[in-house]
Length: 575
Image 1 (cartoon, rainbow, N blue to C red):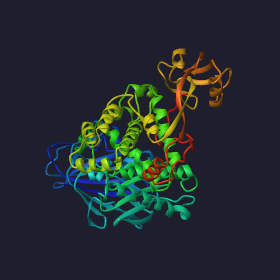
Image 2 (image 1 turned 30 degrees about the vertical axis):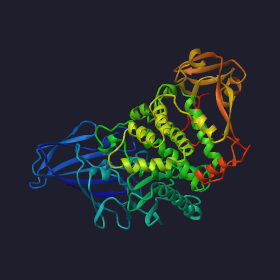
Image 3 (image 1 turned 90 degrees about the vertical axis):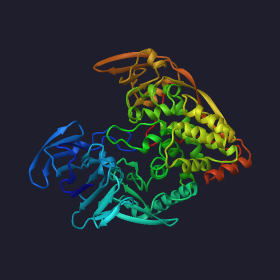
Image 4 (image 1 turned 120 degrees about the vertical axis):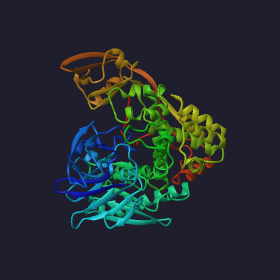
């Protein structure tokens, strides 16, 4: 067993950590993880580990410690039991979600900065030394041995448990006999007046999860919440989640909906990815990472349910729901990569594409977005055959929760329920460019309106070109990723000016490329774009949609504006 003592030094934003363990060899390598679930990237968690010292517990002799690789340290001369002492800096908000953070008032700790023998995933015990007057909240999943002492069955559980300290506000609700804790680390404008209402909405989403899966897979659940705009949190854990609400969650309708969607997304993960896992994730490799083909289910289905359950909780209208479905489809199929990369391929390549990079539109799609649309297509088809994704997915969960799955299992299981579903999984998840979303919208009774829109074939971040359609007008004219737009038709650049000129014919663009100013003439081309929905179905179809989404149903002849595209990963628009 590894025995940690962790002292919080909030005024210095440091952790003072000691780990006692039995020496397995005279030369031992201790390391932090390189990869943790949910982050999907190889990250430098040992970056903030400093002043590492080791002592032989029996003799008191100091042992030699040297850095070994980018994540580890080697201890030489170890015999019997040894104690390794070090400091870990916990000040960076960007790392709070995956490694914890300390402020002067509160802190969240995870085990990511805790050194352990490389590959170790055995039992651990942690004694937390807390400043006087600081409260502590520990999510379920560990055994409490004393007020500040917890035992974890596996190191993996320690990494997966955010423990909260300091001056926080706690709200607790009972949902079907299970406590749900809401830990607010800080205050915000409107919190006193509307904080309880936000909690009530979160509770409704938990009730929606219970309705699908039939029970909760935990003894209690904790939402760790912050309003601090520096903390862009949204990470799932087995019995908890960490969510950045933002400072305007009580003041702005869109910010409120974003918070609800993120909360739903991370809660659904308690079933889908924390317990129902792609097969390779059944045995995590925290050092080399674990990469699988099934994230289109683990993340894509979860993204789909963030919209469905937000609607069922009363936070999202059917109009906004279908606007999102249409816009997710339109933006995804506009990418050159859509016809090149299958959702399963995108999932395997998560380390390569989880973050944005120049030229991404040509080579990568987001398996969250693609998987969401596959889930929508499956749900519509299942409902046409007298069942639903709720039912089939819950049964799939029960069948595979203990053994893990691969995409072939999804295809076989769904196909056994409704043959068309198995065909759809193969076509939409394992092949590039296979989504049938427009046809499924028509099945629901929507009339789709398409228009020819002019396109230059570039993606912008402010003035900078971040991607080009590789066979598009801008690329063929000679523009390049990294060019900064300066003038449009000889006048200073703005997005409005660019759109105006594009819609009227040839566009003259002056760009800054490095230290050079270059000029290009670009002739736009037309592309067919989904621009509108109108419900032309029957009253029975409208009633079925109301039952499905638990919210207002569209009216016959009513247009469904496509104003909303809610995506907390950000949007990629081809100009």
